[in-house]
Length: 537
Image (cartoon, rainbow, N blue to C red; front, side):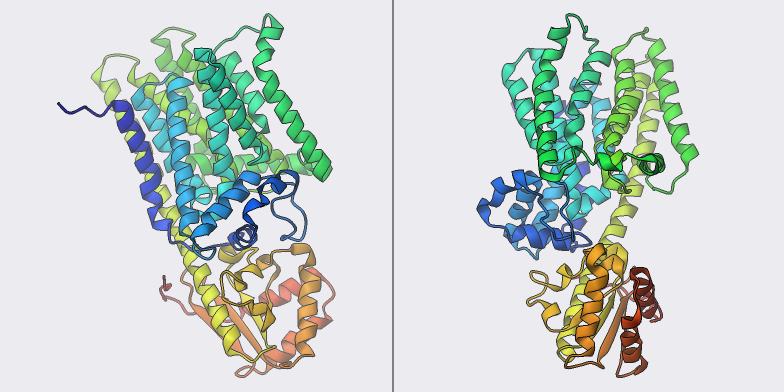
């Protein structure tokens, strides 16, 4: 007699399928934005470079400054995925997808162990988590791994801690500490772990704080490790956790960014309705409270709703206070709470009574949410693939142009920022092209496409001076791509002689903002063909 597959195994397979299948079309998606610099730098590091990343910034100075980021484990992951060919995106995407699936399984386990949900409700929470459209940046974008990867170790450490406390297992407790060490050296936002553990024990487990020493003892190694990590950051960069960003402007920006994050998580779009966000939160809470009253006050699931609702969200979103900018991937860890809230509401409704009507309502509720997020995820993935296709087309067009024009010519690149922000000069250098195209022609662009904002102005002026006094002082080519189709518009000084004089007039500009506006104006006057499908290799 054949062994039956257990329901838990089926649930795990379902979560993996929901995490992997939608993202399979992205495996061949080309590099975009920061990918060019990150992969170029890390793929060139020697195999034994790993220990040095514990005491230095993983990005060196490729962005024109030294980032305060000690991330040896993400750095090593890019070394690993570059083994399939630094210019090949496939392995990079495969690892991103597997990390996402791993996080989905951890959410499934946490819903069962930490929140005490039934298997159907836990499965729903995990599937919703992996389907959230807000995660496309973390998974479909190669560089987005810097948020999904720390979440993997953060959730793993949290799960190991909970199980260790339940089973009184020293081995699992030590495993939790080891995983937390990896999490810290994956990204600095994981310093919130101590708060996560204490809040869980107080709210969900209702652990007594007396005697005080017995209460705090399990957290002391986590506190010590966090303190040591923060001291290392201070020693390396002169700041503990970007506390320099804690000012009035930073607090204002934080409120705006958090509201945008909430809209993106709940509605699937960063420009979604704020009223819908509040309505969704209120509906979940009302349903959960109403259902829990049928089972008596003080129910564990209601405490879990409080913990994974406002508490988890606040802890997960807190590091954004010093991030200084909006990025959907910064939501990755915080969204676990949103998925858990939905799973908890489903469970409370489902088990509130024996009436078939309630169960039908719960199933309909779950189906509607899954369809809503599934459709949103599909649209978001189409957009990322479009950006990648345009990025690849831009690399090919710049390469063919740089090799076709006379040596020493000026090439003004106007690639769409959504595909090439921070991409130059890396995108026109090996491994993405055979030879460094900047050694053959002078390539300049509007500021948004340059890797280094601060030195962009003097470097652009230097390139213009070298071109105007070089071997091809009158040869100019301007390139611009449609941001959706990748259709190319090209203008040359041969067809438009005024281009040469216009480019030389840029040398009379003395302010970076003025130069940026004038370069953008030169690019934007080019008409771009429409209704041309992007060629995908």
